[in-house]
Length: 482
Image 1 (cartoon, rainbow, N blue to C red):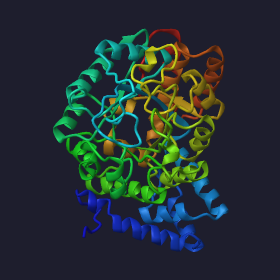
Image 2: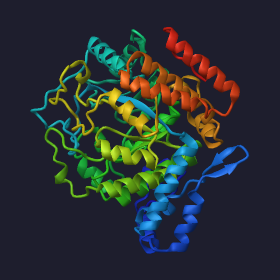
Image 3: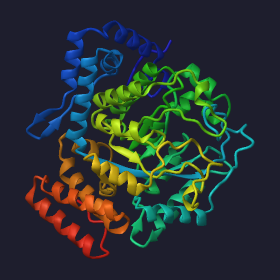
């Protein structure tokens, strides 16, 4: 029988079923233990230090106790601390991105995804390089600077060479003042050699959702295809890091398995990366299963309420305070708005989950991976964020200045990241306002920028940021960064 070991490279040992079950039992036994809960909450709270701010983070057991706790005033404290942590390390910035679907050819049999091999009536499509260019131009015309590329697993139609060629094409397109400055990659688990190729191609974060950490359920949900191999899939992040990719993104698809089990597994995976590689996940995504072509979310009996979803998000923020958290357009405007205050630091905007969807005037549905709940334009999302007091950021500076992996985390942990991220956010927001925004969004945005410039503590940085912003307004000069 496998023994729990966060430093092991074997999936069954760092995501250990017995340890998760013991954790859930411990959480259930202590969910009303006020003394213990208060101690955990105090540990999670961000603390001011001489070098900025610190947050201890929580173990998977401690975080699971908070998730199990349903005492209303304690849940409110969890939410309050989650917001404190987010503001302490990420400020009021929200990073913007969009997914770009390259191909929906797939050889897997995943029962929750319409791209599964047995689905014979969904239209199959793979973008040519010319079509990739057209998609990128459409995204640049909205104002996007950061993409997450997606493709089904198909070694014939979507080999690594195709993915690499698409990345090269994306980075090559400069349209008017537009440029994609960071390409994150969400493709199937692969080899160390292929991860090295992705690293050499200049990708940002490698993203791979576990879907479920419950091995028995995983095997049933992935009955056929290479994704059926639970161990190979679960150990992918270790191979990615061995291949030189130091920014990786985790996530489960909430609704497939019992959420408390998934939550514990997710935090254990983050602990494993920290224990082995010295750096935790760069991002954690929190998608919920949604309706799609031949997929009915009601057929999965582990769906979670908006209230539980919010609690999961807040508890992740307490457990892994330095990790970016992502919420997609799977969720409604209302849900996204609530989660922005509970730790989310990145959101997608104006997403289309169909292959070639951005080039079409009307939103196509024939190749969609899932229904998009929030269908607002990027301008509308940017305006909405500012109304709520968040700075929409199109910044990609850390990645392009080499501040990735442990270098990013060390900056984040000592609070210094706010000295460069805040002005970078304001400069990239200025680019968006000048080049793409509606008049109403411009008025609100320029006022926010004036107000936020005063909050930059370093007078020299403040003066340079102000000068750069004026240069962006008056000329075609772009891409200033700290």
